[in-house]
Image 1 (cartoon, helix red, strand yellow):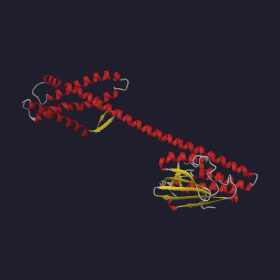
Image 2 (cartoon, helix red, strand yellow):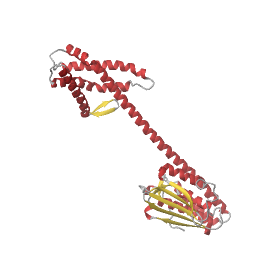
Image 3 (spheres, rainbow, N blue to C red):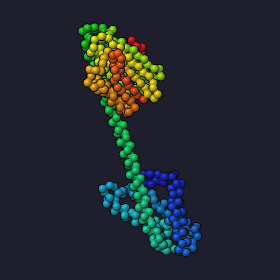
Length: 374
């Protein structure tokens, strides 16, 4: 059984314990005051009087809380609730006096009228203060609950906003990749129709993966590698013997969670800034390893340079900038992506994300490509 106090509830045992403690404190105070004034009275009598007084308020406290909820003092509109509360405080305090007088007649020789007069003379002012103290407690609880609700709503709004930004970034990235790939296929149609057909088949497999009924922002590294192998197959068909790929994956990283479509824009940059703009051949290398609580992924190519870029950290287009934003939204300062030169020639993109195995890895999209490097 619980006592309802406004919008809150409290068990009857702790509720009675609180009022009993109040009664004991006032009984001791009254006994001490009378003893110092030379008036003789048994401690039990003081305790009985105090319990009658405060248990009356214990019975009326739920009513006070209901009235506080019904007529609150709202910021900027205090007068609208003050009038009803003044009337209510007088009425409820008088009810407490009547209740105390009625119960007291069971233990005292005098009648109800004498007891009521005694309660009005001795306890009415304290009763008024008790009413307003209970009202203040209810208002404080109400404002605290409102603040907690606003904090929760603000947190939920921030989470929804971050999720919306991630979805927007991902939706921006996929058309970017699709249009670039279609352009490559169109370029190849006049040169090698068989290869163009093979690229279209691989692209359809990629599109199927994109359209899987899967709304999560993360997949396992294993699934991400299977997806990137489809993309590399398209690029190897386009560049033929000029492009090779090598994949070095630590086995303990395969089930680690990574943002979906993480590697594709990085690999696309490596191809576009490598053999896409330069003569000769190139090798795309993908490596993953665990370093403590961090998953480290590197994407390297051997036929490009950062020296022609005005700002290495910002000059690799929408793919890299979106990757950086997605990592920030998902992991904050715990993730990082940067570009570095490698010797004797080439560029490496280093990605660091928190190491965390994805729960339920089988719930993500299914891919049919293998992991074997070309």
